[in-house]
Image (cartoon, rainbow, N blue to C red; front, side):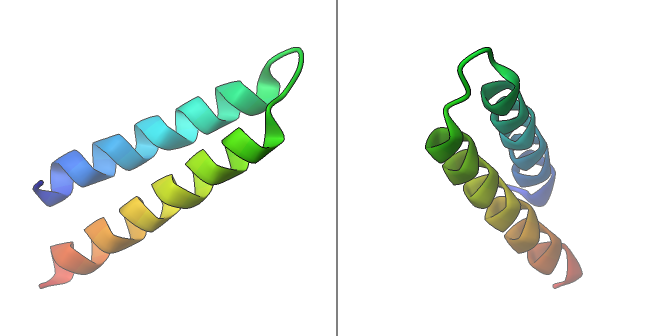
Length: 51
């Protein structure tokens, strides 16, 4: 996947995590897992962008 796709997917993941956390009965473990994976995806996209 190119870095643009990784960045968009990471941002989408963070949005989904925020929606999970903002739901009436938040699923904190799911929101945390999605946020961690999305942050890692964004981090690796930025590293690959520099190369």
